[in-house]
Image 1 (tube, rainbow, N blue to C red):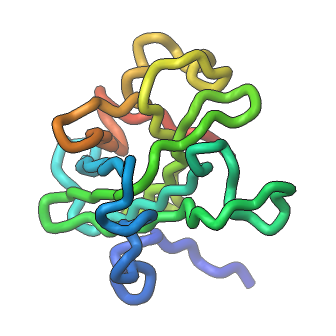
Image 2 (image 1 turned 45 degrees about the horizontal axis):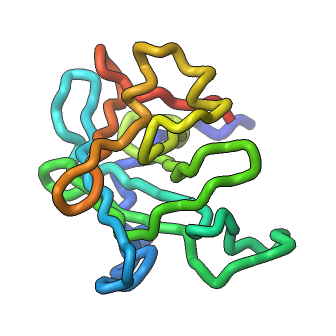
Length: 169
């Protein structure tokens, strides 16, 4: 017997968020950056019940993972639900470069209407990167965060003319 499919939302708030989820590093950490953005649906409306997860290397390009030969104590993982205005934020350190890749933050988006998460990346610059270089030039800006007075802005568009580039995994 087949189990019927079900979207990933809107019940994200039941057990997924936790109080310090958006704090990859504690407030006041030297060099910390704040990434803020809004999740938009295909009609351009803010999505108030999405969940953003981030995973990244530390500033030296190392991951906190048991299979990493040079594991770090940097958590590297953040999780933030969007608020009533569709806004999320993450406080973290800038990621370091990985072998052959520019520094980036991996992002998963969970939201109502999605049968599975969608996955993208946040780049803090347009440094050469094989993944970014493989994206059509006119769409690359959807993966590059904009510097702001207090960190970076990275909006996520699930569909539409400004749709963020998502990757098949």
